[in-house]
Image (cartoon, rainbow, N blue to C red; front, side, top):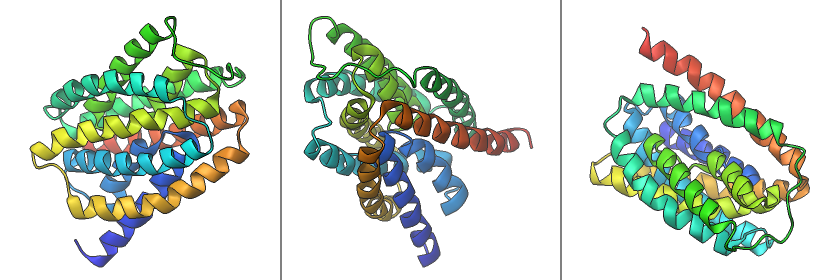
Length: 259
């Protein structure tokens, strides 16, 4: 890989890290198209496997920042992530057998649905001080398994699914959901990347520069998320990000499938 592509990989990491720090999601939905369309990775499955590893590392950086700010509900996040990893392993095994362009196209359609749901719920403020209890534990397990499977199948960190999943299962504040989601994003990304690495579908050099750029982007995104701590503002930013990338992916993947 030449110097230009390494530089583009670093820039892509900055953008992905910023998205993860800001809204707890959007990392992989940006990482995969950036690797394919900007960096120039030819094999979509290599882009997926490499982005899963890079996003997991960048999510861990963002998690540390949110943890220091007190935004992480650890017990809820660990339950969600623990069961989600099981879903991610199964989903990633299935995803490797599906055509890469079809994965991108289906993923973009799913993003549009999630973005619409986030806009509908942007006025919901949530409940401060949410804790793991008998009532929300079954919902956390169910949402964890489901979003983990989607995360593994599409080769993504899954933050854009995890944030609404945490809100739906616990009614926690948006800012807490963003911070807590990074526990699961890290775990899902590592599980998916491990599965792809076994098949030789991870570019380790690209992952390294991507991670380096993501550290800087993650710090900036986390700081901005504190300023936009109002749930409605973050949800709107989150949804608009999803829509923008979804339409771009639909366009590019449709061209690849029907030309």
